[in-house]
Length: 171
Image 1 (cartoon, helix red, strand yellow):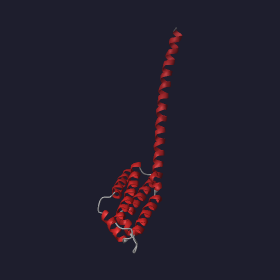
Image 2 (cartoon, rainbow, N blue to C red):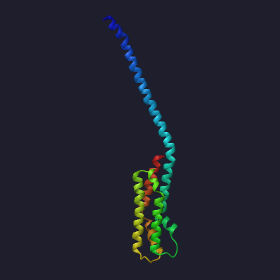
Image 3 (tube, one colour):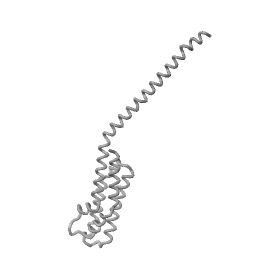
Image 4 (cartoon, one colour):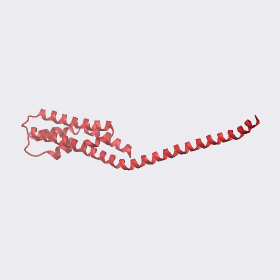
């Protein structure tokens, strides 16, 4: 029986030392894993941040380019009919949008939905404005209608405001 107690005198401290060492090592490895994870996140951020910012820049440029004032000034040519001008405007917006489709990978779903909504709203406004004028009317009539729209806070401006706010958050 004395041997048993003597063995316990050695075993209990050994077990305590073992569990203490095990706990310390476990915590050490967990901390090291956290540090490694943070380093990976920082590396990822260094790589993706410039790409994301470039995506926001391209979306801002897209929204600016499809806003009524910029769109009309860029695409209007003399001696066009309303129908011809409408077709050019719609094609320009769709081409710009198609060119920027990949940017949705780098922005939030909400931001992309607002961009998509702004595009759809612009197309709708062009079609509504064109319908108010005869197809053979001068394109300047459609231009005037669209430029008058730009006075209002359109979906393009609302989407632009949202995208800018979101972009500032990632900095």
